[in-house]
Image 1 (cartoon, rainbow, N blue to C red):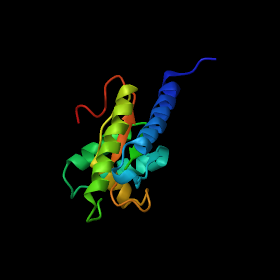
Image 2 (cartoon, rainbow, N blue to C red):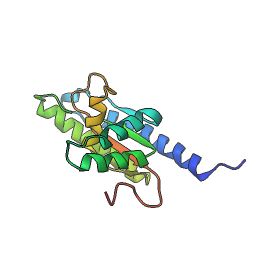
Image 3 (spheres, rainbow, N blue to C red):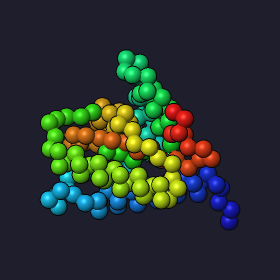
Image 4 (cartoon, rainbow, N blue to C red):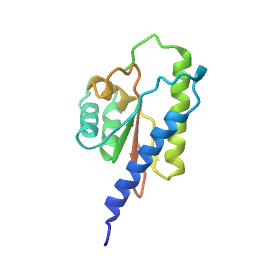
Length: 149
C-alpha cells in the first residue's frame, strides 16, 4: 500500500490537534477548576471561518490576511469576547493556549494563535457557550503559511 504525502500529513495534523486538546485539558488551572472548552474545525466549518475573515472589509486588513492563512491550514483548533472575565480564567486560557502550541511545535506542526479566527468562530456560532474564542490554525507545509503573513 502506498499512502500519499498529502493524506499522511492531514492525518498527522489531526493527531496533533487531538494531542493539543489533551494539552489544553491537562494544563494547570487556577483553583483546579477547568472551564475551558476546545474543539477542532475542519472541512466546511474551517472554510466558513476563512471566508468570514476574508469578507470583513470594514475591519482591519489583517482579518482578510488571517482568513487566507486559515484557508491554507488543514485544521483550525479553537478557543469575540464577552466580558467582564475573571482574570484567573484568562490566565488559565493563556496557559492552555501556550500548552497547546507547545505540543504542536514539539510535533513540528506549523501553528499560530489567531484571535481573529476565534472572532470569526464566535460570530458564526461554532463553539456554543464560549465567552472567549481563540483559534490556532495548523498546517504541515514546506513553508509555514503563518510566517510571512
